[in-house]
Amino acid sequence: MRYIAAIVSLVIFCAAPASGQESLWESSSKEGTSLYKIGHYADAESYYLTALKEAEKFGEFDTRLAMSANNLGTLYFQEGRYSDAELMEQRALAIHERVSSQDDPDMVIVLSNLGAICMMEARYSEAESFDKRVLEVRLRLFGEQSPKVAHILSNIGVLYFTEGEYPQAETYYERALAIQEKTLGPDHPDVATSLTNLGAVYREQGKYSKAGPLYERALAIREKTLGPEHPDVAIVLSNWARLYQSERKFWDAKSLDERALKIREKALGPEHPDVAASLNNTALLDKQLGNDTEAEPLFQRAIGILKDTFGEEHPNTARVMLNLGTMYSDQGKFELAEPLLEKSLQTMQTVSPHNYEWLSQALNAYASLLAKTNRRAQAEVLQTRAMVYTAMFREARTKK
Image (cartoon, rainbow, N blue to C red; front, side, top):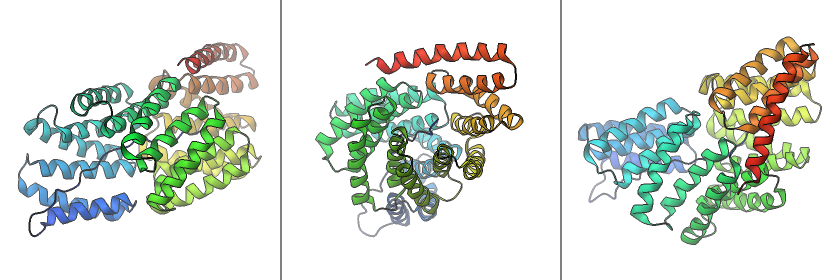
């Protein structure tokens, strides 16, 4: 089982050009945004907090305060601080709802960001509601060929991808990519995002020959525009490693994962959920290479990070728990394995009921443990359910 890294993106605001001498709010906003764009999030936060404090002086419902709150929310999202991000975005939304029209572009950006946050917290119905609302407004305001439309199409694609609805995700990613290449050019960072996402959905559908060239192109764009140590480079590396893993090129995958982990720990800090993703991916490769002793502490560290970030009732946490539980079961350590497998299955049934692939894998893993511990009747019930979900997953994969 893999920890998938599709890319959902938020939008920051840039301060309007100053007339005459630049205010502290303007200079802090601009400097924060410059640092944010190169991945220096801790330094960017300091400037954004200064800008927020200055914006509060303009009044409770000043749109500059909404801008600063949105920027902090976007930063917190990148740091995996989703509750803090939502508080900031809700603050920005409250201002816009008081002073802006329903079609105000800045308000729509905040709605889009809230959709991304909901998706990361597995609140999928809320995320879809935000995203579809944003898509409707942007189509009306900007037309079908706008990069702003491509941005929300991409986010909707990530939502479907996360829920395991790969054909739908592919459709949205392809639409987004076509718009971006036409309007932004072939080497724009947004194009790299769509290439990476589309590569991931091709990989999940077994279209390996189509995925590889997309990752190669995305990596070249990211390294050229952002530099080799940016967190967005690590996203491409991690996705490309999953392709190698699917193709059983384990040492090639491990090399990319180790590079991605180093980038993330340096740029994001050791407790970021993207670090947990890299730890989990490296642990899975160690397990496949027969290095269970090296894999175990990586799984455990990843689970700790994800529990602290999301809590136990989140699919990302559940997936890594499933990976560690499966390894323990394979080792015959059933007392350690069963609580992890049971909790993982419960979480997935609750928060990801339409992700048939993950559900079938969780059911099969738990059924295997039950069979090994002479609870065959219970195992057969879970195996039957897993077969149903597997069939549903295969059907979903073949629809287009």
